[in-house]
Length: 208
Image (cartoon, rainbow, N blue to C red; front, top):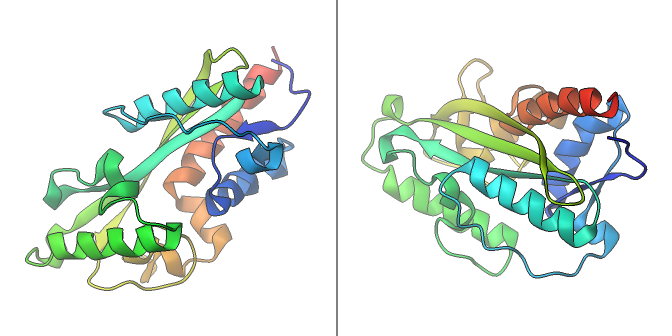
């Protein structure tokens, strides 16, 4: 596969795009987001039962719409005490909301309500990121997965990151994911792990 133009990343979330670009950029892989290319198509219905299924769906959909290789991910939080919830419903756990900041705040509030009677040591959780690369025809070229484990605390801490980052406590550093500087977060996060693995797959594909 030859990359004659930047890879499209199927997101309008600037935080997610920055995290992916921070990993791929230094190895010479350029990326652009949906808003960068002005792609105006309806969002696909993410009805997959797994992160992998949703990542495939989005990658193929936007690749065909833009007629260029597309990288998509589906990610979320799995909490053991909640049977893996919110899982694939992480982004809309408490409803859609009007803005991303509002949705994040409502999702975090609902999660804390659900865990109100659960002891801290039983609040083990992990972020999961499934990533998929599709060619311009929507054919899957590569898939990767990354995880980022911690414990859910009682109140939000930190202003970096987004989503549930302020609630995932990392015992080894004594901070939440949202308290880590971006470079430290990328070095250990679920999306960072999936993107680094995808960078290796891309390197192999472009050598063919």
